[in-house]
Image 1 (cartoon, chains in turn green, blue, orange, yellow):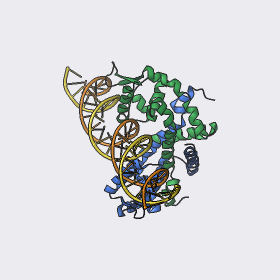
Image 2 (cartoon, rainbow over the protein chains, first blue to last red):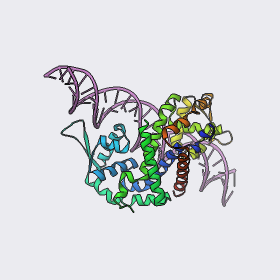
Image 3 (cartoon, chains in turn orange, red, brown, yellow):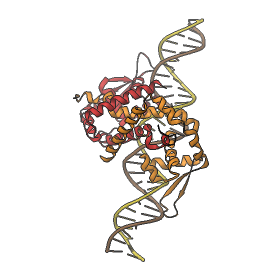
Image 4 (cartoon, protein in one colour):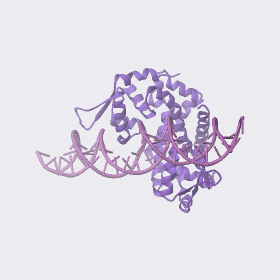
Length: 147
Length: 147
DNA sequence: GATAATTTAATTGTGCACAATTAAATTGTT
DNA sequence: AACAATTTAATTGTGCACAATTAAATTATC
């Protein structure tokens, strides 16, 4: 068992390694996404829309764990850059639907290679990758439950 | 092997799970850190200073993987809140040393319980925690090398 | 010892994150 | 039908992140 002193060391904290890893991975994505003219959070929005064609702000937020304070301005920037369209639902005017433009749709072709390139940069084997993904998703689920 | 289509699914991407986990864990810290009047990145700075008494901005940046554009304004906010002192080195005026105030030092007592509380919220066993820490640190090192 | 290269913080500008509040629309209950 | 409660985005304000640039000081080279 660690001492209470040791537990306060930066390098013994799981949270810090997750936090630092997160920023480092995003840093590896950056040059690839720069080529597409998008940021990492915008890439995540596109991943959802490539999969589902059309989502409400609410649905995007649930998928990405982001709220409207983050999404609304980001989606407006993406609209200005002609990546997505935004329009209010006819049925329920509180709801805003987000869909892809032609440009947003076409970026998918250029994104296919990205996961593979990142996988190589990670230095992990496919099994290690899969295992880690599994563990993190379990952790994510558990943390989300204990809120 | 995954199809190129499957690899673009949000939920099959390791990076997203790291990114989402990072924000979720920080969210678990938030109520605890609010009590201390600090943010998560500020907590990280304090962890380093509790361990080393005194660090330059450069050293803090290396430990936390952060640059001066992030640290300078953050350290100034911490100075305003009487958590740290900042002063230029006599030997080399390019260097700024950061040290703890009494208040910054004393917060450590109230922080001892934090790692334990987070550990409980994570739902992990000590072994799982240790194992994950190990894997993430390896990943971090490898990514940092492949930049 | 002049000057070129390097090191170190600070500054500027853009883009997330997220808490808290607001506002509008819808739904549920009487 | 009235109106209270809920749902959904948008807004506001603060605090990171990070790229790119600037500025000052130091070190290395001639």
